[in-house]
Length: 248
Image (cartoon, rainbow, N blue to C red; front, side, top):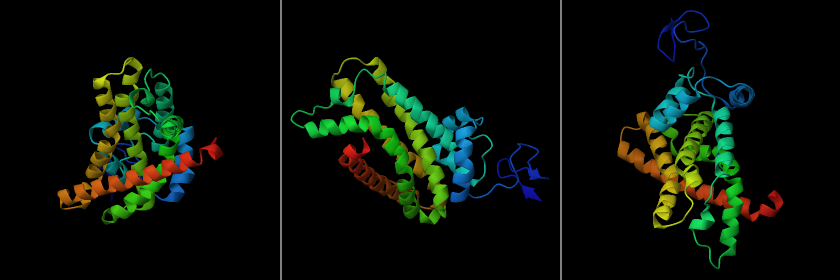
């Protein structure tokens, strides 16, 4: 007798009588991601966006590990969620009254100011394109978890969604109401800009915690992974900036 991976009830037939999840829950594969989840994510809006957002904000790594393991009925599709959050962040960031160039001085550094202006319009797209790259980094760093590359794509898509939620709440929305720059605003700017990287560590620590006995060594591995991800992200952003004339 099969057990449902979502609620642990016994399954008779193709669906769980208790929660409705399919009995044929499978591991993620690249074929499934592109042939099913991507198309489904664009053309269907599943229930569960508030449930998924709550999980990403309160217990991000644990909730997404459970999703990857099979508890999928209540979760919102990761592709759809990313698309919605990207559109929302573009809209809210356009309402901001203060921008980075108003807070950080770029005197005698026109190149740096141009770099910031370029990134302002491309940061969401580049962040989306970084997911496959950072998934390769996490695959190599956390081989002990035995998650395949497709599963790393999924967990990093949700991680990116969680980071966008944090950024919208603590970075974009406050700049709609803040109109003057002072010391407190400058401090808050650097604080809010660091939150996605703090979330990165929190998410990975939770997600991979069952696979590593020594949690302190896991934490060090997560921090190392974050530093590598930061460096890789920096290189990718710079490549986009250096080829800005071609991209435009």
